[in-house]
Length: 144
Image (tube, helix red, strand yellow):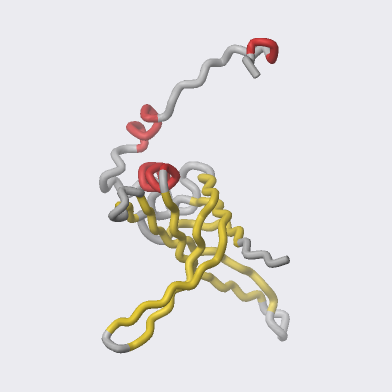
């Protein structure tokens, strides 16, 4: 059996970029930074940052582009994939996480308020979210 699974939780290093494929499917690319703290051989505390390229497809790509911004935290589950292409006669490689699931972290974690570019104010983002009823749901009312 083979396994290709990536799970990361980090902060976006830039605003997500949303594009459309020729087929019409939406694709969102973003970069997440994860921090790691460890002790070196001398017992000194060290901190290291890794940067991960993440690609999201479909409706989830639209949602990420709409609600995430530089500094937002996000949890991403997906698979690792390495692409290659030729550029100026040289072979180029890029390893990415193809996201199967993206979960947003707490608001204003890591980077403060949204940048304001095409995102609107945080008040506008709050009003764009649906209002859920506060009534209890009776399990017998569910049709399945």
